[in-house]
Amino acid sequence: MEKHIPEGYKQTEVGIFPEDWVEKRIGDIFDFKNGLNKGKEYFGYGIPIINYMDVYKNSSILGKNLKGRVSLNKNEIETYKVNKGDVFFTRTSETVEEIGMSAVLLEDSSDTVFSGFLLRARPRNQILDLEFCKYCFSHKQIRRQILQKASFTTRALTNGKLLSRVILLIPPTKTEQQSIATALSDVDNLITSLEQLIEKKKAIKQGTMQELLTGKRRLKGFGEGKGYKQTELGLIPEDWEVKRLHELGKFQSGIGFPLHLQGKHQEVIPFYKVSDMNNNGNEVFMLNSNNYISQKVLIELGATLIPRSSIVFAKIGAALFLERKRLLLVDSLIDNNMMAIIADIDTIDTKYLYYLLINIKLSKYANTTALPSINRNDIGEINLKIPTLYEQQAITEVLTNMDSEIENLETKVNKYKQIKQGMMQNLLTGRIRLA
Image 1 (cartoon, rainbow, N blue to C red):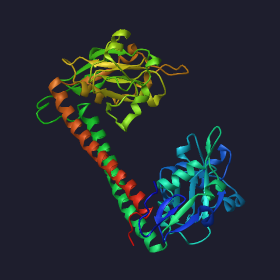
Image 2: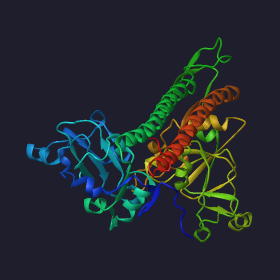
Image 3: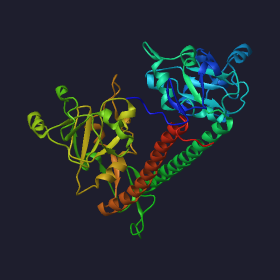
Image 4: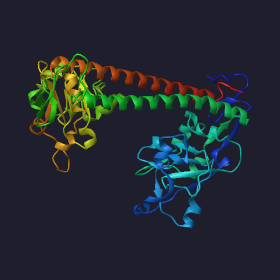
């Protein structure tokens, strides 16, 4: 079936666009240059340098945000210097999805250079508005072309020759380009303000945890007329106790994952691996698993389910993973690179114990072999300050409410990010016109 082309639009190599939009290849607008490569001894001091992450995480670059420094002579500075309006593209990465990400330099930045992991695109002409450059290389039609033209050996790569062949459809006037950029910038500003608020709320929560979990501050109704006592952990409220972690629950290690059951999403019992801690970006709960098994397979394995609300964590791996602790939402299995703590609910509120543990660096208790690991005997001896169960539950309620507030803000951010993606696709293809 022929694709319907609305009146006032045209079919191009990359999709349907307004008739008056101008078709250009990136190479018609920019000249490309590879960035600077120097030995590691030259980095950490000297003049500012635009690095990979300055581009990958951003759509625009300001000199005040540049943290990288490099020591160069005058000829090198002249060769690799940057100008206002230069667009930088990520040149190489482990995965193809991360190449060709772009950011534009929005201000003059004297004696600043750019990294060899980047390509500099310097404008030949004034076809593109500066603010419009923040967005015009990021919508689906452009990203698809960039990825299709990439090469892959041991790493994904792009270069100026490949990027020069990418086709852009450009609004005919700077006024329309500026209108599009303004609409998208407004959403960006909203997202940024929410992200800053989230960071502020997280800092407040961290401070509150430090006070409440150590007894430095007591909630209303607790501790009136009570003093403090000296313990091996220092001063604690006199109605609190010091207990070892193994006194608060039991440890349960995971089992070897049966590889022939990889996936099995039609089944109902989650079988978590350490990598599942990355799923959904949730920092409190284990949510979706990449692997599930059936009740029949559970019986065949002779395995015991770890009950919901247990705290799970990696027991083998880099410190990054050893510091992640999560709560189970449902009865589950975990693999043998993980361990669970099943709390004694007559002694400790499970979520209170979770809040205690996220403030303890378990990696400190890891052995020093090639692959760090922790064992139950070592971490079982960790001493913890424990209030009455009733006070634990009161503290947990305060911290859970703070978590919920942060989660609601993060949901809002994700919603606005989705809205922005939809706006980009509509505005940068001319489906919606602003001028």
